[in-house]
Length: 154
Image (cartoon, rainbow, N blue to C red; front, side):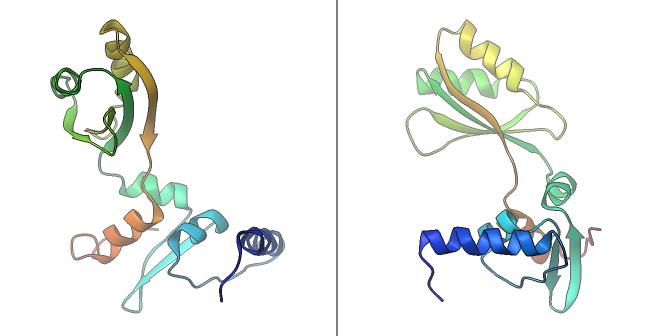
């Protein structure tokens, strides 16, 4: 069923309202909608429950490394070199746009303060700096692919 944007918002609101008083079972492959509506998620793969928890808890349990999104106004080569030289940085990937990067760090190492200080001390313009959470799609794929299918999360 095709819904216009207003109807989508109304349906989301209705499901949340009903869910505050009773259990609603929503079966969907539209994962962005599921993540906006549901308080708890049950993931089934080949008839087996592979995970059941809140979206936030699933993210914490399954996020292997931290990912930081950085948008900075500065010379790309120099920015990349300085970030790659930082302790705890596993990988730096330029993303869409001339001045944005996705930085993977070891789990438990939040380098945002160090990144911010480096940007400021280098005289560059900091536009955005934030942790990237796993999307529900990332969680689903991690649980149902061969590498993650054997691990049951509860």
